[in-house]
Structure formats: C-alpha cells, structure tokens
Image 1 (spheres, rainbow, N blue to C red):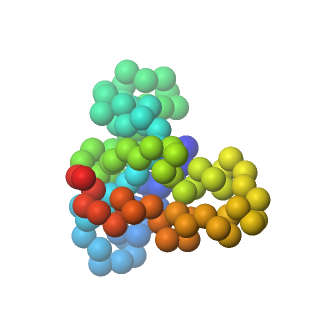
Image 2: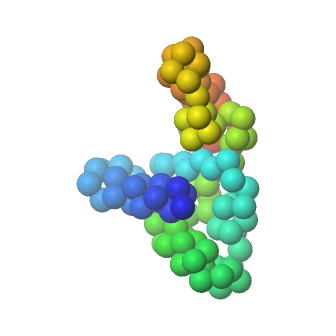
Length: 105
C-alpha cells in the first residue's frame, strides 16, 4: 500500500509544484511491487490490479527502482528501533550513500 501512497503523493507534488514529471525516482525494497508494475495489471486479483493500474497512471516503469531492505532507512522505524539506536543511525539522518548517486547506478 505504501507504494500506492507514494505514487499518489508524487502525483500531488507534480500538481502543486513546477517539477518535471519524469525527474522523480521511486524506490521500493519490495521486488513483488516491481513485478506487479511490470506485469499486465489484469493478471492480478482486483486489489492489486486496481493499485497497479493507478500507480502506472501516475508514474512510469522507468521511475521505479529497487533498494535492499537492509539499506532502507524506513525499515528501521517500521520494524521498531529504540531512541538511542535511532539517534546514532547515520542512514536515518543523512540518507544512504547510494541515494545521492544517479538512479541507474
């Protein structure tokens, strides 16, 4: 569901700002989501079909990239982390190094 919310948020940002649509890259640590996006939406059950159709309405396949779950800073928060651990987690405060590189790397 987070990938759909991300696509909707991106669509909204393009609506309210002068950003060029194809300049955004969306990252997911779920390879299943990428396979849903690359397949025919009608192959999937209704919920996934509807989500995928909406995502592809707002984004293009070339905008989606995969990141490893171990390198996803949001994973720490969603899986539970103590405040002292979060305070010392460099990737949470500064982002992973790969995020500042070109998405094709």
